[in-house]
Image 1 (cartoon, rainbow, N blue to C red):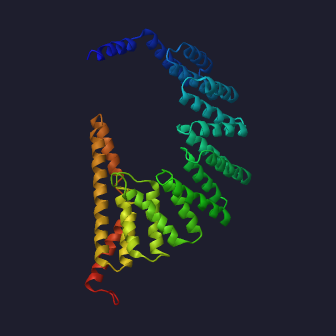
Image 2 (cartoon, rainbow, N blue to C red):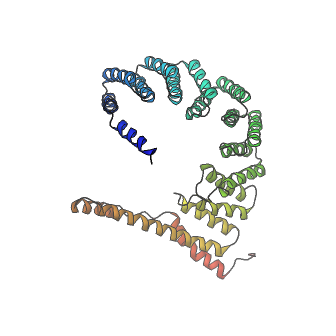
Image 3 (cartoon, rainbow, N blue to C red):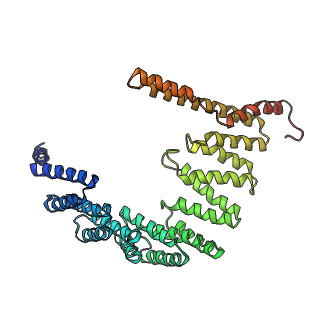
Length: 390
């Protein structure tokens, strides 16, 4: 407690430092000038705030806003120069990187100075791979590669060089993935095969990388285009495993998980002819995404596969589950709507809310009447199985 008391006293003194409070008030007022479009006044005040800041990080933030005002005023060249000065002289490393990113984006997208911008993005990737801006720099370089064939080849070589320069760095797996993406986009067999080489290396060298699901999905896209369906399914199953073995089962799902399951359903119902696996993954979709918008569509897919397998009892149960799910969803929505109306400020507003609800009754999902029609048909099949039914 003896040590804590002086610290608390110091913090209390800082909290009531008149100079700090005045600086914060000035910053807030200057921000209002910026929002109101009083750009010249805002620039002058941000300059003063930068010079008078007691904390260097506060000064950097004021300098960032000064540069932003120039951009808001469409003085893009002046803004880029301002950002670059801050990238050179700023006290905080994160602010310096952010400033360099802003300057490079202005040079690329507003000033048509692509070479200068790309050099800055490469600098960010090389010197600050741990900063969020490095991923943004990679995005820009990749999108530049998409612009035409010449740019694509140039960016493919660049990603190779960046990888070779730092093959175990924080962005190394991203260099491999981005290079593979550009190669796949060539639309040629050679480009696809060169992409696969990079993707295989990513999987081998970076078995725990967060880029793996995206790499696997790109790999399966290429295999599908080459009609290598069995190999495609193996990798899609691998994507699903990353969901099933997550640290807390079903606590999250990536878009790749849903896409992988949906594509496995198509493969197993189609060229791979394995309806048991198709049903497993069709059933997995609603479980994986908890309450997806397409829940009823997914359940109807399960029902169709069960019928294809001749499992009439299972299909009947799924029809009933579908109808029950739809009813529960509509009941939840009705309860929520009623709660919203109950929270109206006046009786008149509540009455208007309830009238609006009454004028827009719930729409029955299209799968429900289909399932209702199917139930007696399935009951008939159970009572009198078609010839040839096992």
